Image 1 (cartoon, each protein chain N blue to C red):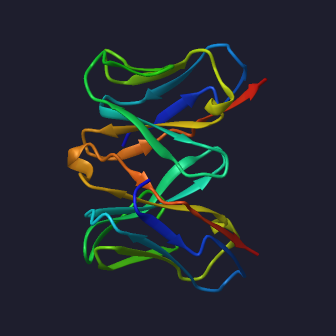
Image 2: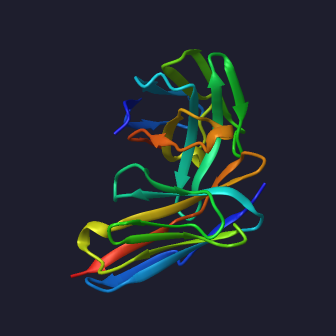
Length: 110
Length: 115
């Protein structure tokens, strides 16, 4: 099955700044999903990307799926304190196995 | 949030004792999953179920067993708890399952400490 790596592991951001977190798979993916987990909470589904080169936006969040369907990114603009948490990507291979990355934990300096 | 509950929410037990965690859903979803979450490892699949009495192993199944006698309930059992099983355990459900893109909805989690 595929290995899914996320970088960076930690992201410390000044409020108002932008940042990007990246997800890379060892194999081509059928689709990729992103989840957010607030401190002390549970993962919550954000979005799923299926098509090569797909870009989707949710307010200040922009998700992108690479052309080769092996990588993805999440870009957050004008970071707010409500963005604090851990963001996980989960890649599903063509063997239907879903593999989660280790997550990027985001903290925000006011 | 999806209708998923987990019990207990917190558990402290001793090495060698059996422990059972319960996941209950009100969504009538066919697919249910048990994950453990540990720092630096993200979420790792322990076992999953694709229907009543239909279960299969995930990537970290050693030391765990599961049962699903009703659509709404999925039980995870640690036959003889070890300190390495100290973790946060999440149950998840999915309507589509693996062949449908498998968007998952997670329960609130159970924090287990094995002393």
